[in-house]
Image 1: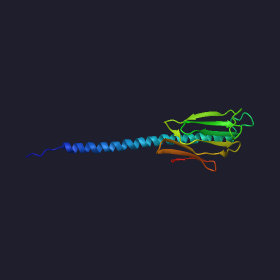
Image 2 (image 1 turned 45 degrees about the vertical axis):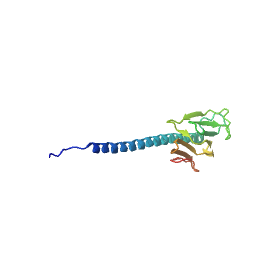
Image 3 (image 1 turned 135 degrees about the vertical axis):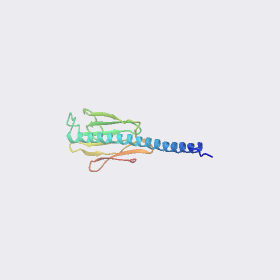
Length: 159
């Protein structure tokens, strides 16, 4: 009898099943990696905006009258908007102050907490500080913090 060359139907089904399982694993991993990248990107943007407000306080940018000597970054839980404003007092009087900038998180990323960070002119001293928590899903979060030395850092965990 002559021996046939090739693979059987069972062998083909097993190969297709193994290949399918591997592809599902790759898809799940790439989706999680994309989500992590989006959260990291937004975290870097927030870090940049906080540094910008800190620099405003160091340079006195946008002070139109002598009373505007505080700069605030603020955000709200569940929202995607955050703001940089100049103020007359640390309690939040914006009268006559010229800085009022707004930013928005992208990629369906939202804030996981509310808070504000306030810097004082002329040395950029931290008056009020909160950690900025953002998330896209319950398992992908990031936290922007300000150290006691005034460094702005982000961590891959919840606040």
